[in-house]
Image (tube, rainbow, N blue to C red; front, top):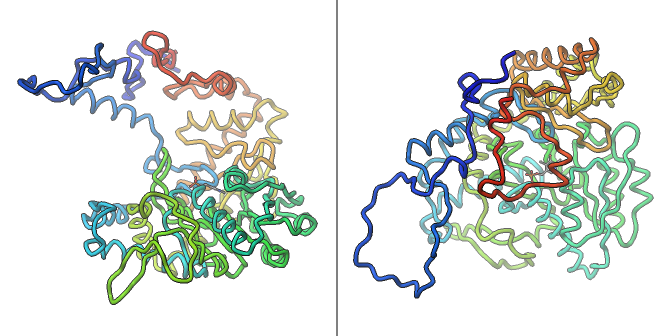
Amino acid sequence: MITETTSGNRGLLQAEPLIFESGHATGTGVDLPEPKGTPNKLGGLGRKAALDLPGFSEPETMRHYVRLSQKNYAIDLGLFPLGSCTMKHNPRLNERAARFEGFADLHPLQPTSTIQGALELMDELAHWLCTLTGMPAVALSPKAGAHGEFCGMLAIKAALEARGESHRKRVLVPHSAHGTNPATAVAAGFIVDEIEGDEDGRVDLHDVTAKLGPDLAAIMITNPNTCGLFEPDIKKIADAVHEAGAYFYCDGANYNAIVGKVRPGDLGVDAMHINLHKTFSTPHGGGGPGAGPTVLSAALAPFAPVPHIVLKGGTRELREHMAGTQAFGRMCAFHGQMGMFTRALTYMMSHGSDGLRQVAEDAVLNANYLLARLKPHFTAPFGERPCMHEVLLDDSSIKPKGVETIDMAKALLDEGYHPFTTYFPLVVHGAMLIEPTETEPKRELDRFADVMIALAERVNAGDVEFFKQAPKLTPMRRLDDTLAARQPKLRWRRGANDSGAKVAAE
Ligand SMILES: *Cc1c(COP(=O)(O)O)cnc(C)c1O
């Protein structure tokens, strides 16, 4: 196999150094005359030495970023099995709507009389979210799932304070929770108390009941949970928690598995964020922007963050105060992610409520198809029963042969796939979490399953070295994760660092 070329390029994939290495101080895409006759008003504070910023001409700029973009993996390239992230297709119709001037070219400080359409769209989105979840209110402004969790927990805190019960500080979080759940609880000023899972990978009702008490503020549960299973005792848990005077926060990141089928409001949920960028198909991966609107029960609705959208005499207004409410504050400077609202509502309206129900059914069907194909070749910790929208495997059958989850993930890179989620949830050692989503056709599911099965067969054939060498075909070979975590290089210095573009070609 050719892994080294003179140019460092691989086929038509171009090697590209860091912009700081290839850019040059004099490089620029514009040619302006030196300004003449403008007095220097910096009072002697002007920079003495040239600013060491990399400059590029226009074609160099284009090539730099296009080369970088070609090193990316994207949902538009292929199946993106990253569990818990719901990497589904982003319909182009959403993109079209999000680019309409009336939505895209707004300024958040524009007079509300000039943004009536945008406010109506936000109201309509709120209506869909409340209807789908069976909840009376929603705060649209949180900008990510984690931000939505923070919003929900701050509403819970405000509700407890209003009841004169701010001594309630303890929040129950299952061991299997996404890391954002305990982090959010702590950031909002609570103390985390871990609850155990039972042997079926679900929250242990007995452990919850044992841990109720007068200092309990809330419980945070993901449903379907991070093992890809529906929590069957969810209503009993909600009732017990309410009985104890606490609130039920539901992590709604896995809502894709139940949208249109189950209304979280009927399960006793008090607050739940919805990742528009997961369930409602707005693009993500690469750092955002996301959107995490948070639905609230009647008990928490009065504490929702501002602004409120109020319809009065046929006109919509943004209000900071509303009679009968005690908002805990605001989540961000303005009103949230308009582009994501537009995309999500377009997605909802183009599917209709029946179509959204089918989203959940097909997401679960696709996951179960993959589970059925992969189960004979890997260990599926809870695989005796059907899963929801995610397939949870672990490396217990391959590890004794010398190949671990990380090696499987690296081998997948050479096969042209973004890896599945590795080592999460933490309750399963060597977890491989695969979420195909409803938008993968059977042909793609089969291609992916064929690759996974071929890799399992390679493990059985004893070809451990193949896995330890992987990835061979990526711009960068395997990195030393431990060293990178222990001694991170956080600063680039001229001459001191090397991008490794050459190293990668070795
Ligand atoms: C994605 C996810 C989150 C966090 O959502 P962000 O939008 O990434 O902040 C929380 N919990 C679970 C289970 C998730 O999958």
